[in-house]
Length: 523
Image (cartoon, rainbow, N blue to C red; front, side):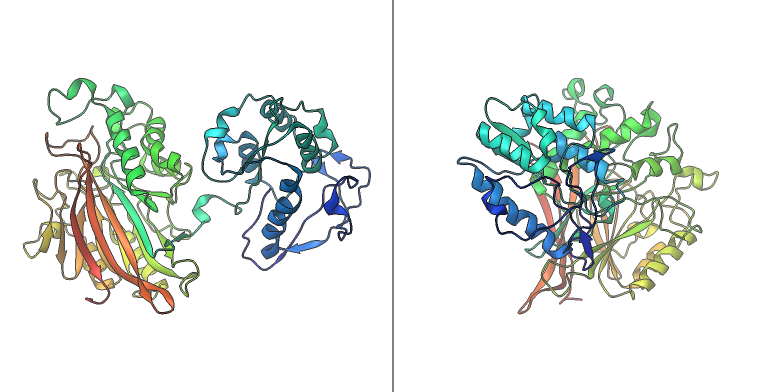
């Protein structure tokens, strides 16, 4: 099944499967008829050949389906269990979901398999070949343990007469799917604060992923070298995602180490694999090493934005003046049910700081140039600048990270700040915009401090990856940013505070350096 945004007010058309009511079906007696003009139940091209149908409002559609499931389907079986199933583990749901992305209709109900491939998958499910789905625990799907006689009736009711050709399992186990999702990719789905008024971001800086288990680790103890590889980076990312359960994962550049990537697309996919598998939205900016393979900087970003669950964007629409790739912003809506539910209460800016080839012959590090700053100014103007607080992510720090006027420093500086020799004015632009509360970067792996300069927090993530240079005995780390809404008498209000801490990849998975970056009352 496919549904457009269920909160939209326009009407969609739904057609009852074209079959005569089963006389043993008690719920169909006295029920209002939703007619279809195909009494023979024939199908052409795998699609239902139907005439006019009775419209149902979108807002009532989901309730209608669930009500029918409850009143009829579940009442037919003496024993059943309903659990969520991960879509990829439910092969029928996965197949229909993929087809739905290219379907021209807003809502589709199939009363029989619409392809031979789908019919084969159903046969395999019925024969118990895909029992892995019983261990899945999340996302869309419905699995029920049913008695064999009821299973045949259920198949007939949901999928039409043709489904009776499929053999039924001896155990009486049958797999059903209920798929409801918006048209388009995940990038069109808004980020939103949780019901507890929080939004959590996990920053992953400098993975330097290369070639998996064949990649050596840098700056670890000699005893660790024989069994250390990119897989340690992957394990750390999986561990951190599981422990923190963030709402957004942000990769702040040097995600792969291009020189050591014979197949950069595979390296990118492997590097982001834990984020993809988590089904948590994630976003990317590039660093100075991501395009040092056979892919250009443009191609790296073009490939990245095609990966599952990413909110990354190649560049904003109608912004051809921007020189880099991966300059965009994301909006985070208020908590569901609050007056800010449909408003952006937190803005996230992502900027491309370029690579060495973008700059000069003396190998100065680049920086977001005038075009990126112009984009930032345009984006802020559209949001009336101080309408909501913002965070900005990029890879290479501006020179102000080395200012002698930094205050409230939490964390360590163990190497020099590798910033551009020429100051592009990025910091001045961000500080003058007033809405940006923190500038968060990577690049210098053994710096992990946050410090304030003229009201703007400057934060390093600290090195994450094991193929990146580091310091033996100084644990790889990730930064966690937690944004909290203001609790008012009328529910959740705007952003109240922005806090941060770091997670270490040590034996105790230590959390360190709790720090308040910004507070509405203090500001």
